[in-house]
Image (cartoon, rainbow, N blue to C red; front, side, top):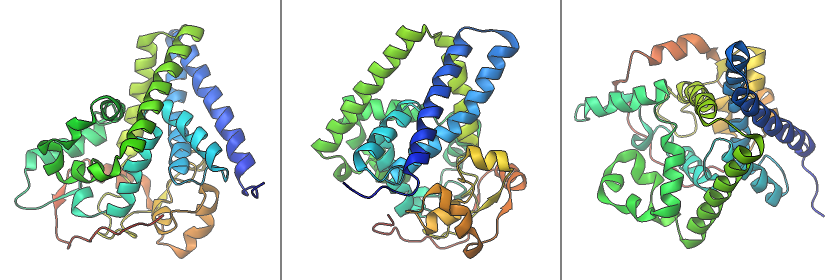
Length: 303
């Protein structure tokens, strides 16, 4: 029997409690109105951040020391996003090895960049338009992967690295297909058993997706163009730190990508000092800036 990890029990209990809470909130939103409905949607929007944090840990294979259980917890957390776990894990690995390179430079632009496209990308992230593309992307990858091998996807800086065909051999595509099928059955079961209201679920996810997306780039915006050090540590409230599972220590995470979320604060003193969250968040709304730094080269692997 393999040795148990130091945070296995904690993470497993948190995972079970969180999934139960998210499902209960969807039920409450579907069977209530007025202030109770608004409360359910509001709490769901923030607990969804914690679910994503668990999914993120699973993508790094540190949610549980048992690889099979880590994957199972990651798959269910991904269903509640919703997205294919394998699809998300690939995209996140791509993020780490290409961080702040030209492939992942959304906050700066070159003189020859299409300014309209750059601003559209930027504000789609800040306003929450971007997240629905993620479940659609994993669905299309499961059903029609050939779409992503077409020229428009392969020419674009960001999509060309995510949809690099070498990352999607048959076994990976089959895993994505099984996860997407599982997600469809999972949601069919939830709707059938709990009699969920489709509009209530859509509103709850719209609130979560905006809450998640508008924060998605705040730890990277205008950071140094460096693969390992191109991120910020942020000052947030204790409650937000708990909801994010210490995700505000993003520079520490990039410097120590195999560290557990529980370990990030202790590693903080060896990293750059945190900056205030709200000034950093608000400066994003001014839009992308002209690039003045040389582009770093992607690294082979950081995990």
